[in-house]
Image (cartoon, rainbow, N blue to C red; front, side, top):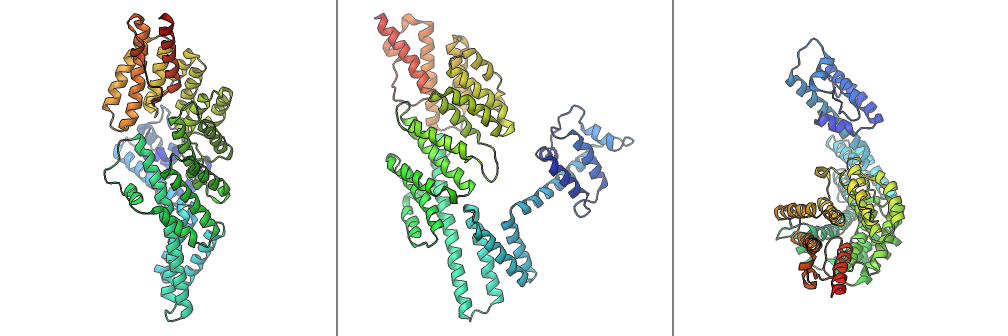
Amino acid sequence: MENIAVEILKTFSKDELSNFREFLSSPFFNKSQKLINFFNELIKYYPTFDSKKLTNESLCKNLSSSVEFNQMTFNNLVFDLSTTLKAYLKTLCLEKYRIESNDLFTRELMSRKLFKLAKENNKQMINECTSKPNVDANYYVNMFYLLTDKLNLNKITKPKSNDENVKLTVNTLIDRGKFITFFFLTEMVREYENILTLGKVYDTMPENNFILDFISKTDFLSMIKIVIENEKDKQQCEILKIYYELLLALSNFDNEEYYYRYKTTLLRNVSILSINEKRFHFGRLLRYCLTKNQNHQGNNKFGEELFKIYEYILKNENYVSSITNNMPVELFRDILLHGLRLRKYNWVISFIKKYIKCLNPDRRQNIFHYSLAEYYFNIKKFHKAKQFLSKIIFEEFIYKLDYRNLFLMIHFELEEYESALSLIDSYIHFLRNDKTFSSDYKKRNKKFIKIVNKLILHKTSPNRLTSGFIFIDYNQDYPYKEWINEKVREVEWKIQKAV
């Protein structure tokens, strides 16, 4: 059974189910006993709700066996339950986001002219927010709104002619301006980096890009520097320095000195960062190393540097955020492939077993099979690799290019050349029709397909082959470069030996 109510209920823990039952039983939120009965029947199929016995008709029959099934009545019950579930989640949000909900509470008190209570609540929230600051974008925005409330309360309740009150207003305006400036500077650097990264993979960038234009046409680095030099709060200065060094590293990518400056500044201040900030910045270190490693695959220091960053992130759980404790699938895949690239096979198996549990349950099974397929392929157990890759539910797998590339290599290694050529044909059509991947990303995979196709032609008709026929530029970028280079060198060696 699939509907909004079931989707929400699938996410509930047993404690949340118990709390929601109390919520549903409260006359303030629900006055329908029929809805309570409907919930009690539906919840018998928790947590999967996938029993064959669970049908619209069976639910209604259990509610009242004497009444004939009515689809409209059923739809109304589902709608009412969904609405009540959403209301329950909203109350959880109010409890979870304490600063934000209390800010709204202050405004409600002000609208009722309960200014004394509003001032007390506002003061308490400012103290709570600044005593142990979890400094990130939310902190800056929350402080901006809390200080806005403070300004409005001062204007309403205190005379403007009083010098002390004027001074308080000016200082509050200055502080409010600081926080919105901190938010603007840090978030602009974040947006800039994210857009640069997306532009490398997806061909969906607009011609007029406000973020790129703003950063390139203003002296943005100087803006950050001015704020750093004039800010007395050391913690805020250090956080801005991290973003300053990040922007320098992005703007001077070929100069590795700026990467190490960024990394040093980050590690020096990691203890003052929120979990969201840690996840973001360690992600930027990874992206830098990944690009460097991709540009100079197989023979550069950034391979080991990248592995060290991965180990640090895993050890300190810098993949979690305030939204989820799950490890991003993209990070899991990158760590897996890099460990295999460095031939740390025992480490990779330990990694898979330990961290597969950290992925979102909906994606866990597919990624587990994919990981073992990659592992067995790398240790040259191709039948086992094929076995695990075949277990992947393709429609639910996000790495469809990885899937095709790996299957193509497995077919080649197992000498299943007809299957490989059939896959190449469908793969080319897929890339031709796709509108999401960038042209550069497609070119990388087309190069891969072209070379594998030549290798197959060599295997199936070796007498027609010349050294020029298989020639490739080893400095070019394409997926599974190490495997491709190894296979091409084998062909070249055989040709030279034959000559």
